[in-house]
Length: 363
Image (tube, rainbow, N blue to C red; front, side, top):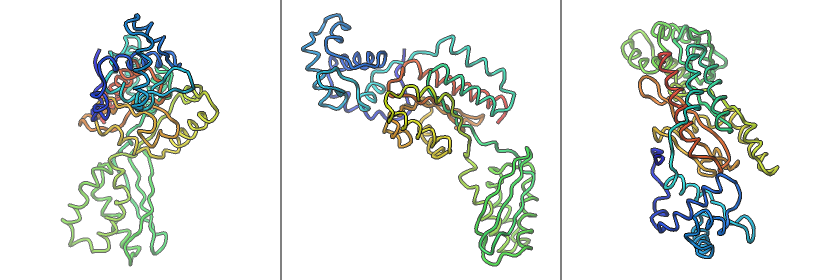
């Protein structure tokens, strides 16, 4: 077994250092029992689980202290306790032990690699479905944008202060962006800008073109007047920031999360979460979640704005391309009461499978 290394600083370290080993042991047993059964845990239950080494009265006093510290709460009067979000963070950072992915889970996930030569969208769809089935949660797969070589670029005037740049890639994809051209644009300048880009873009992706276009403009200043140069610069600027990532989010198994809602308001929160995801809001923000570290990261409830309203937990891991660059991520969304010890290694291994598939395609 190993402790989780999320690649980020542990915000719960000061809290953990203030607790005695006995208090940590009691807290850890309580959280483990809660994660398995989903019910508030009482002092008598803990005393039995700890083979009577501590009396219910002693455990009850410790639980009151832990509640005062904000890591436990009592859902009802005279009931047992459950961990708060702060408490779950403490458990994940300091007490969670993570094993290796199970053999059967490993075999199931590895089986999709034989299909990695097919359309990458279909492959990632299948991988997301498997991740959802194995974890009984909703899964998300953030796919990299297909950055295909450019076939043709064109500029179209829409109004004196608006123009359209059309980019066609070799795989038949067409992308349009509206931008504000420099004052004084003419049909001749638009055509000249398109001719210039077409002369240097062949065989290059939009990412590569953005890297070299400035140099080419400098080299050919005598051929390009100021208006044309500015048209080129502004026309490509609308892709700035998208070249690194503008992907597709695959969401599978949302019914697993909806079924877990115990109250109507909980279900409505979850529905709003998935409505946001399916409208692709905050996708880039989601990628930023995994860029802070190379391993599995866990976001509990309000720790991230994207999941704060639903009270959900996100367990996510990035995957990389042949240049060791993070290009996407896989993850699981579920209630805060997740089987973290099992789900963390599954998410980690799924990210490895996604990375292997990307590498085999030479992307």
